[in-house]
Image 1: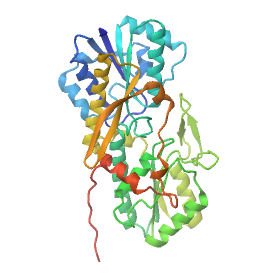
Image 2: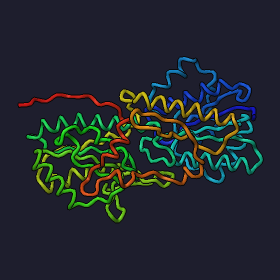
Image 3: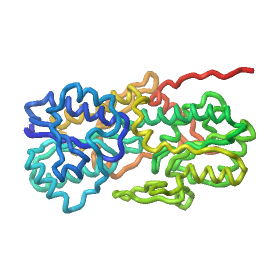
Image 4: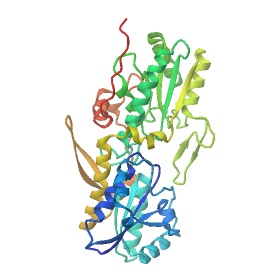
Length: 397
């Protein structure tokens, strides 16, 4: 068993339950004083660590640590720094300075790549270090895990938003004939798909769901919108931010790349996918409508956080520490679904190098072939994560 200090960081965009994973790590570290002497937190991820922006998490009051379970955003602060070759010696020297032997990061694919590269470099340099990744992302596109902590709460945020905005659009259809709701998610359609959980009756929102896994076809979209309008007198559209044409061009007017080369759609004042769809419907049919782009609200809506999501996030953090103390390195904690009804789960692991290189798009069997919507198999997967939605009434007459 290695003896030394541990360090934990948060990276990339937050979720409403990322701090629950942080709480799990802090409280679990305190259970192993024979291995872990101190637990440090990175302020602003690996970027802040290289500037020695650290916090002694073991010195924080117990009620503060416990309160992390219900606190949104990234309590330690985050970054999107892509490690350069010159960074590795800096990181290693700081590990030596603070006697860091246990290294944890909470994040997505790029974060797992960061842990993998640092752990590999330290091993090559003869420095004993154990690195374990803790999953996080609202996109749910992380390889090797049934779902990611944070997704269930974000999915519930989307479902409730589309349900409630859909009721408003239905009742205001003499004024506004359509509404377009955009979710985050560069390359996977898990969040827009979650909107389907809001649908109870045929005329309920959403009517059309556009996911990045399928190329956008203008004629098909307009035909489906027209059909919905003729049936219901209004149209509800949900789209992922990363929806593209068949040639891979985003339907959003502009996009930029982050430091990892990932596209950020509609960034820097560009036109979002929802705005483009809004303009297309307005110009084609002369309809009046609105678009809703909630961006990071899906990542920080703690008031809509799912209890299961909080519990799973905490368990992933605590399990990462257990694995590290046991000597397991180079892995990410994963969630394995045991059953849908009742919903049960367990924890597993996946190699960091596989997670860093892989992605998890929606499978074909979750996407309808004949229309822009999702299948019943997709809903069976989503419902335990989204939870029960409220029942609202409407006049029968």
